[in-house]
Image (cartoon, rainbow, N blue to C red; front, side, top):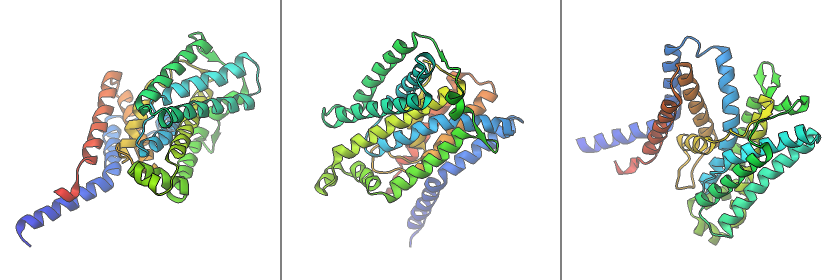
Length: 322
């Protein structure tokens, strides 16, 4: 084999290893950098704060990952979280409805939003970005109507249970997050519907020929995304003891960034929950570390954007052509 061949083989192996271990390398570097810059970064108190932060956006990222795998996007996730959080707080705090019923209605509302998105995309043939952006704006209006522009404080023990309970010092929202990622990892890996999700993202025309009901699967995916976004908003409201109309504004971009950073391909057909989970952790640690260092929000957004660009660039590397 000539020298060029050896060089090409070596380059392919290096790039393969970088793609395989990229997430862990970035995570390790992030932790090392911030722990060296701040003595408080690796304290239990700060790690607890990071866990609470990622537990909300992490739930949203599950649904976003499913949407991207099917060649879609859900830009309404943040608005859905805000609306359903406000709705549950309104029903419980203002209307006196039992929390269990309010919770059910809130999750049902999230599922309804997802169903509307799915139907408009599949039956109405409207682009996913436009559809979910439009429903997001409508939900934003619904938030203002319900809240009258103010936070809704709820003095109810059941309302704050999901967001404030701990087991052996571990916050319940973080436990819920881990359980959900395990469930949806198994869903994608072992279920027929999960395999259909990948098939549709890989080649929707071939999926139709294979007898897969493409539209039905897409609608189910958006319903799941809506329910998970609603659940995330409800947990956040529970944690704060109040529903705020300002939450969720960055959830769409953050969830897309975490999914892409975790290896979910924007053109569909490829992705995994374990990768998204690592992406969530990296973005959570990055944001937390920059806050601890007193970095302005504008620069934190720039840093998150740079990480996303890096992830997409690495995705676009075609090892076989080097």
